[in-house]
Image (cartoon, rainbow, N blue to C red):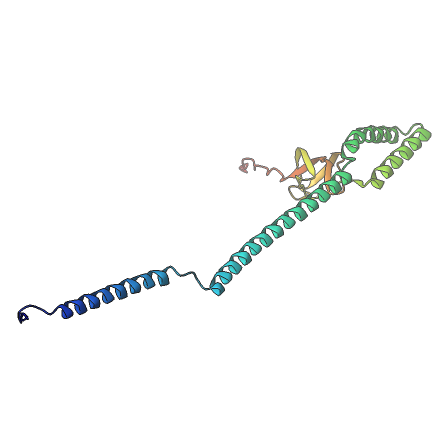
Length: 212
């Protein structure tokens, strides 16, 4: 029977060492796989549902805001259309009034001429009746004369055709109405043609005479 060399490692030790190394390798591989699985694990169900809820709530708020804006725009459009239709009805007779006023002007001139002549009192009375009826019709349709005589000049309602110096009235006062103006409701049909006062011209003093 041969004797074993004490310098050579035992076969059993080598087998045990290899088995230990294999176990360590398997353990490291298992830990690596476990770490990968834990890092790629899905979020909990509660977190995913919470995120989805927040997204839906944000979308709903945006839709509500858009709906409110659209509703406000529609309401503004409805009010604008109603206002335009009301103005159209309110001032529908504006052009007709402009066409009728020259006829009234001619009748008033004829009445004024008849009153100055002093002749044909029946004709004068007839002109007066027609003028009064005409003015009554205009007033029933809310077309009324513009106040002008002795009023401060207002370019919104008056048209100055002449300035006349006056010491009896402040500058810018209507002294005479050449043609009456009219307004329909608050809109001018035509302005009053007027003569407006101006400051009186200062007289220059002549050279003083030397007494002998």
